[in-house]
Figure 1 (tube, helix red, strand yellow):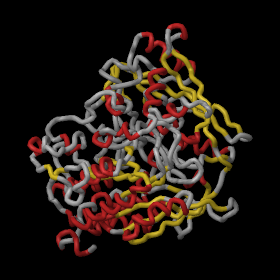
Figure 2: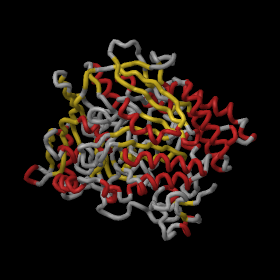
Figure 3: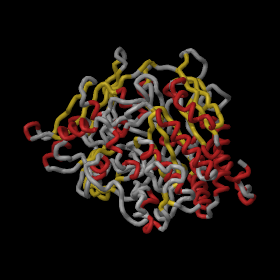
Figure 4: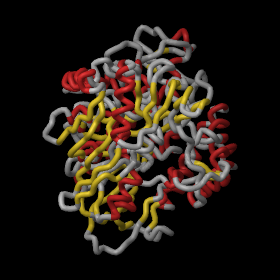
Length: 588
């Protein structure tokens, strides 16, 4: 890698390394994230934003009022009153981690229904290994409550700051091809959802959906357009232990190995660093409960961070972007990868230090993390690295799943791009590369349609929406070939607007989903302009304005229609002449 660096960037190595190391070892408790809902008059005249402080189009969503039901009966009353008034509603969670505008009601007179207080453990049945919880319970609480009675959620997302209802609304998942797969919604055996109703039923009703009811396939990944989930019953398993080893290899054979690796290890995933031509394989399997070890997952990227440190990291990114310092970015990437690997990505063998592989521990201690959520207010001396109240990380996320039959072709196309422009993807390696998680075909109508790999790419976003990123055209090309050449399915809770363009046509049972939607909410009280666009019911998923493609709000087309506004050439991808792609020639 040294050949990529100029002498002028070498001085940065020690400074960047120290910044990263301070993030790794800092253990102070963090200022918890701010409430995503803020109102100027108690619970009236409100705004809602996601935890990152910005939606893809950078707008702030407004609502006339927010309510916080704590029981299902209160929820029924709230929905009934809104339905009587034909008032628009949207469900909001306590953490608001979805990047798209799923929680935004139409206009400024809508009602936000927060599930913040619907966080109770309602029932635990150890004999059937099921647990019923309120939809507002966080993944962290769910894992903890289950562990208290010797049970475990077998698969889950890696970030524990999601709510049960939020995970179902967006199809959130972990990584596994075993059992029913890695999506939380595929372990739902009963769901209670409050929907609008006619006057003869009091304008609202509770629908109880069991596993044998096909309508559950609509409700367990619903984008929040069917109603408000009040309670969820999940099928759990007896507590078990896992053994984890991270193994580095060259990426030359990734295209051949990516698919088979997921079948070899139950909790396998892959972190791919294209610019480094390296792959980190996660060898992760169950072991006997008497295996020695009390390992803990405290992933570095989810730890509390001194605000001054994360500000220094962001400032470094901004300087390197503004000066086109590709060499500096590549140096930072190499240093970041080395430091993370040397410290086992925040995993420890005993909850204190990392002594070596394998890391063995109980499922509840290894499956997810998010320690920056814990703690007391400390005047923002520390925070989650992306907290918008400090000068922190600000990024895009492009996340999609591709079926196994096409995975190799996509990986090889990305490798070809790296060969053409070796420095182009160093920026994503600063965010730990491309996370590849294994997903299985789901019975949910809007769930995964086939077994495959979910590719999660996080990358720098400028505070100036009209300022192009370094090597932006390469990332645009990757996004477009994933979605349009390889038919990628977007993650419902992530992504920029262009990822959802025509996406709904890729779901075989969308007609069945629409039937349930029409039955549950015929007046579209839980729908919004955004969800109508995503579901293909209305045009406008892309936004035609100056600079739109820079933020993924529009897509350059073969007729060059956006090139004059952007000031860039719109060109077909160099090595994808058969693909329907046309990308920006951003600054290089």
